[in-house]
Length: 100
Image 1: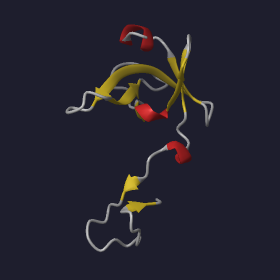
Image 2: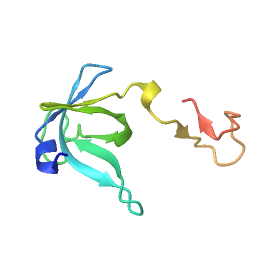
Image 3: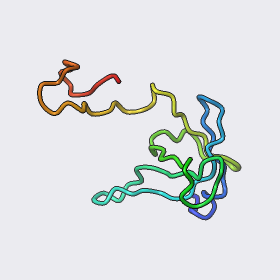
Image 4: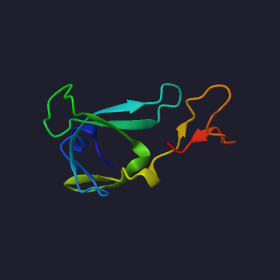
């Protein structure tokens, strides 16, 4: 187990690009289930409300190590985006998801 105070000291690294995404600054929970949905990172500049902060889906976390949190933000690991076309979907996907 790990506490949030320990978690937020770790660097968040994207294994698909090799980028340092900063440190975890906050966690977003699902209101009705209480499950962790996303972690928010400080970005390279750091600081509260940095313009480079990122919301990373919790499902993208690969490993929480002693020194870092490894995430995979490659497109193949991300869930499909719901189709923005409400009616008369121009992408003609039966499942309601676009590839864009």
